[in-house]
Length: 170
Image (cartoon, rainbow, N blue to C red; front, side, top):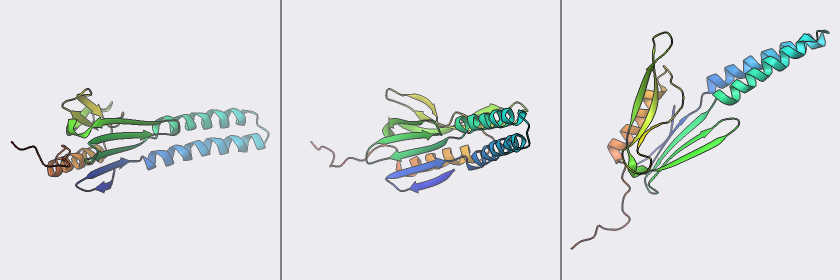
C-alpha cells in the first residue's frame, strides 16, 4: 500500500501488487523459454509447453494482478475507487459525504489462517452498505494499513464537504 497524497483536501491510497506481477511474469517467461528451447531442439511437444504454460501464465497475470486506487476528495465531495488490470479499467464513484468509515472484512483461509480485505462503509445514499476495495482477501499488512489510513484521514478531516459560503443566518 502506498499513501500517494494525504492533505486535508484529498487522500489518495494506492495498492499495486508488484511482487505478484513479477512472479507471474517470470513463471510465464520460464515456460515460454523452455518451450521455445524444446522446439529449437526438434521437440514438437515444446510448442504445447510454450503455448500452454505461457497462455496460463498470461491469463493469471491478466486476471490476478490489479492496481487499486482510492481517492477521497473533499472539494468535489467525491469518493472514487479505480481498478486497473491488463484487460479493464473500472472507476466507481460515490459521494464522500456518504462514507462513514473503512473496516476490515475477515475470513479464514484453507489452512486456518486469518485473511482480511479493506471495505468502505457507506451509511447513506443510494449505495449504502459495505463496498470492498479489493476482491481478494490477504494475510499481509496492506488491508490494515489501507483501512487505517482512510479512517485516520476521516477522523482528522471528517468526510463532509465544506461549504464555499457562510451558513444561512436568520
